[in-house]
Image 1 (tube, rainbow, N blue to C red):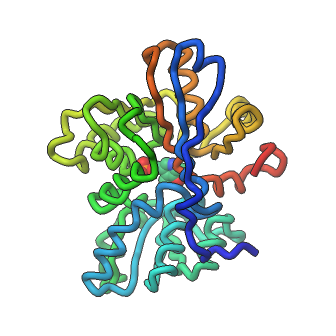
Image 2: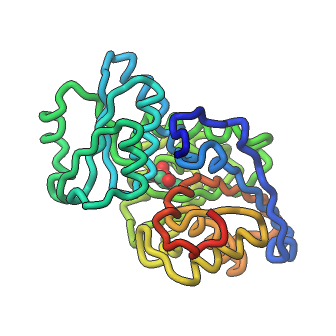
Length: 303
Ligand SMILES: *Cc1c(COP(=O)(O)O)cnc(C)c1O
């Protein structure tokens, strides 16, 4: 059994250059910030997003954290970890009936002593009810959405040497908290592109604007809605093939929910001439590889 509570290894993070004909032909460079290497289970962007919530909770003398997620949520497992590491009790409100067999994610969260509280989809949204029920607890939104989450996500770029050299930064978008942090931390010559992993979630643009710094509101960012592969956590044979190819050609592991769709999107947008020649691209690898455990064994040539 893996020691889930072992330390996070921020010193393992590095920037990996990608070499490929489809980049060279257009004189485009592509580097990947490997936040997935922080920990095999506690994924790349999640700890950044939690950091300032936990600080706030500690300063306000809370002892219990409550947060939200589904059965495969990377945010749930990361919160369980961060709470254990920082001495908080922790409750996960989980969307859906309690299954006979817990997912890998929920099993790991339980090992980290998160208390799982299963509710149906309607009850899940009734935050006022939960606040009454757990009235001494500090609440963190699903996915860490909110200003403290953005503040932490902005620190991701501290792990990139010479961040200013990049003209385009790509990352996956769930709640948009990570994207907002990167936008806040970037300069005017940089375009930040988020690849939405949900189908037609056009409220995202507003959701991101809502948590951006006031002086970044006009800043150039785009959310692309073309690479969801059918919707959240949906995938097909083509995506799995692409993930295996990416591993074999570039030694780059990706997850099927987020980072594979971003990498696919980058390649496709370059091939469709939607990215200008001579661009210097940074892709933030936001982690999430533990999600691949829910795929059939043998579907991927890496794990
Ligand atoms: C949670 C997650 C995201 C989404 O982050 P948001 O800040 O909610 O947009 C992206 N990639 C991975 C791997 C994740 O686990």
